[in-house]
Amino acid sequence: MRHESKQLIRWDDLDAFGHLNNAAYLTIIQEARADWTWYSRRPLGLEAMFPLMVVARAEVDYLVPIYEGSYETVVSIWVSRIGNSSFDLTYEVSSAAGVHARAKTVQVAVTPDTFKARRISDDEKVFLNTYFEESPA
Image 1 (cartoon, rainbow, N blue to C red):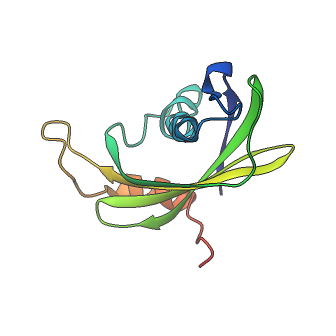
Image 2 (cartoon, rainbow, N blue to C red):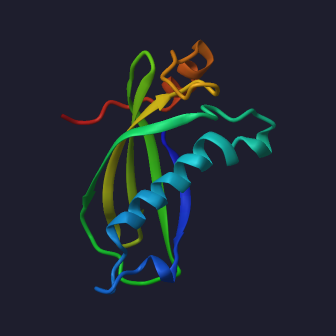
């Protein structure tokens, strides 16, 4: 299963070349990730998952530029690897025009007191497995 989050491109996300700035893609996927772990769960009466996690790595493949603000995209998120204290998330940023970008992040669960890596709990593994999908090699 994939989580889908609608994300609106803001006018100020566009750069001097008139297209969505490369760094703005990371903001878009961050907002979608917050929706997945926090905001979409609240209306269901569910607690946030991974209230503390950090991005250890991020990579983005830019495929089709976005040239306008107030443009609606959908960010699809799924889990592509589950480790002991980290997991990989894969993303697609798309619209009616097709897939604009694919991204991947390595997320690390951390403790609230030291912000050091901690083991993923059993409940968190169940949550992650709900969205697990092997990515093509």
